Length: 167
Image (tube, rainbow, N blue to C red; front, side):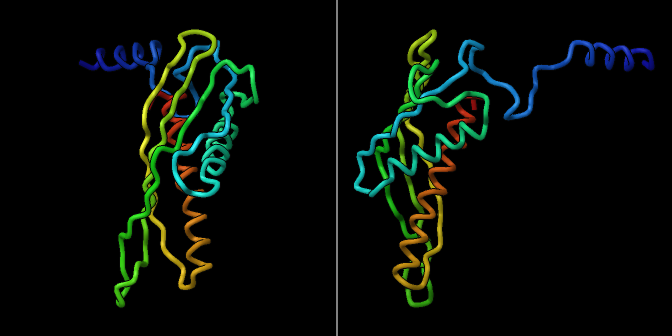
């Protein structure tokens, strides 16, 4: 038994395993080195949400660094359309006024491999984010705008994980 354990450990370390840390590998083919992300479309009546979402997603891919973000002629293309956006009250104060909202957003995503296999991903992603209201109307509007950026950042994180890491 004492001989089996060192033998097992030696085999394990020599052969290695396929596990890797998030952000250090990619499930994409090696031929894909750049991505283009045009401004997302929006089917909702929420001012500047298309720009907020596009900016957040683009920044997440830039920070990740595994794909170079370019304007055109990229190895792959990521397009999206905000299909739904809703605010739902989730908490109330002692006077029964809304004190916290939940943003629910659904975005249709299409990821196209321009080098090889065409459309590699075509699906709807749902994201949500809770935020607290401010006491005054301007503070409430500021909180909603900040929450829109946060939910867009969360969407960007999910897309980087889904496209580059396969989860």
